Length: 185
Image 1 (cartoon, rainbow, N blue to C red):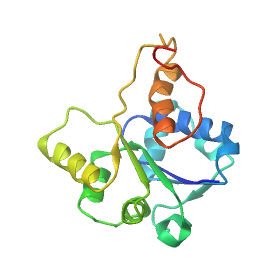
Image 2 (cartoon, rainbow, N blue to C red):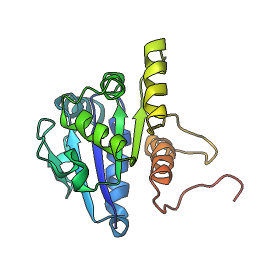
Image 3 (cartoon, one colour):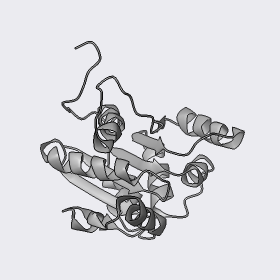
């Protein structure tokens, strides 16, 4: 079974994090540990964008962004995947620079050094050259940059369906078996 860490930063795009958490809970048979770390800014953005604090209601273990004793802060914790959704450009820059000043950046560093799967769902745009170079550095280090760019092949009708086109792609990248729209099928 799998051990998954999810990090939620303060970039706009709380709906992506919400949809991911709900889909992971719905696919509980595909993982045995799910840990979440959420920045204080992420909590504020969630309240602003989603007009609630529903993240508090999920049956998931949450860790403080300063809790370096969290099991996914060490390679010995054997977490195989980390998804940062949404991933702010500041977080991406600290990961690219090897700055492990929070649980999120420390855990991303651990995932990369252990050659495990790091998926950064960047939301900011447009990109400047610093962003592009940071994306290159993380990619060359083994991470996956997955811009939160929805697809429209499935003719989504609601904002949740639009967000799910990104979330389902993230779950595919993470190796989950999800039922979703498949091009040409």
